[in-house]
Image 1 (cartoon, rainbow, N blue to C red):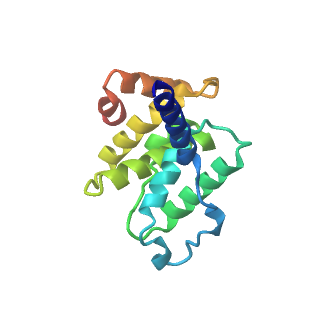
Image 2: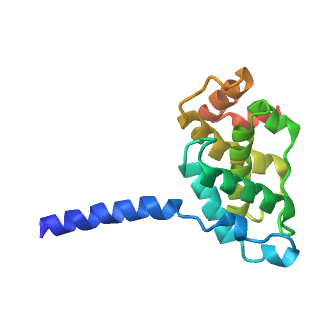
Length: 165
């Protein structure tokens, strides 16, 4: 009996890990008209979760497709407006991978908090999601001094003061 329970939990853990990484063929999803965006939020959240669950890796084609899909969705959705302000994106020093993860954080935060429209609040929420993910990545040699300072402020709970004072 104990063996079957152990096998069940092991199988369930493997299923949860692989299910989270299974995405539909994103290139086949049309986002050409406003009507194409209706009801896509669950898929977008799945794409964002995938991005946050997988390490930054330019060789991972599925991750690249997920990033391209997210950008296309953010640029075209008629239901949400996303602002990428220089003040916030400057911390990523034009690093496309870091900026993509900030965009993923911004999307996740906005979709989970649809009533929030204040740009600063959205940006802080996105940073609080993005910075821990970036910190977990192995290679921090790409980090600018500004990004280290931003991360330190976040870890000390002083992100708002650092960004907007």
